[in-house]
Length: 496
Ligand SMILES: [Zn+2]
Image (tube, rainbow, N blue to C red):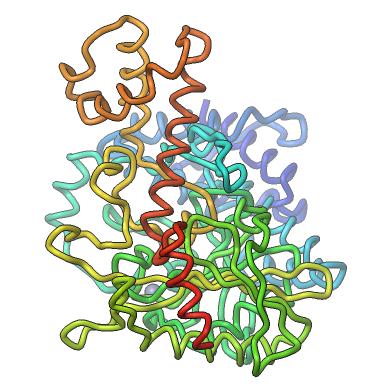
């Protein structure tokens, strides 16, 4: 059985362009060694490979029976099947050469190749991503995307116990570091033998390109500093984002803010995120336009979006960078007590920006989302953060991806919503189940608005979650969409 699997996997590698025909025997022998075999039979060319996940599952089963895996936990299996895929994955030098050859045809040809490659190697586990629940919800701000993320495996307690006993190492320093390329991993760090990164240069500085293994949206890429240095939003970041969309005009690129609560989950390694997906925010129009006295070649305005967004457009990136830097400097030290905006309290800074860059024809576009991370006794998790009445759906930070209009919601929601739907249909009390009691107050508010049936309940729940997410984004907006909020936003614009 294992022999057939090896032949199938090599055939898969040939078909997906991972294995060069010249390397067929070599790769077969590497796989035999991995499975501690010395004999081989069968002809690879005659094999029609099954789906990759089926081949790997059979190989994992064999490895377990042979004692090569201690337990069949997700972590142990992931470590082992990545090692298998590592044998099929060409070295970085080969992948980079292919990427840049294709880049010379067009940037899109290069990223198309690299995205297909990252899936073929199973670095992006497409079978797992397919489990995510995704839908679009109509809101007054356009179609907002929602995903319940089910592809990040939950840790098995057996692995947590073992990882706890293992010696901690600082190599690689984090999940983004370039030292992950080809790394074998261990119980508390994923294996990356099948991972290849592409070096790029942004404004003369070394960065690398890779896709997110969890691809929250189409071609979700990460652009990370060659060195493990902390995130910082400054003038250079704006220039680098624009330089990225100049080199990859079919991609968008943004950065998380550099302060806790309003930033992303990894602040310790300088990185941006981008991709080939058009978010609702990119389609959102100007709500109000104005000119910048010092930068007359730039078109500026406020975007119709639940958060507070200034959009700048122009052909000259240098001019945009100067204008943005000017706005960032003003915003960092801006206080408006009446609007509850404090640049700092007790010496701790609160104001920052989430920037997002795009290219539209000849125009470069930069959206600046004004952020503030102040906390109070009433809102210990943040004043401009999802408020407690929405925590049953979303209580995590509103990072770059959410800002752009994609809600990444926790896996628990799938079970909870299924139970909620079941109870509503059967007219059972929502307060009596641990899965639904947190959602009861919310559901009882909208239930009377619908003629609920078996057929429409799921769509209704999805739509209502979309409405909550738009509210959550409004919570994160420093200026509310009220006459007072708009007047306060205008006071800031008057300073620019
Ligand atoms: Zn790092």
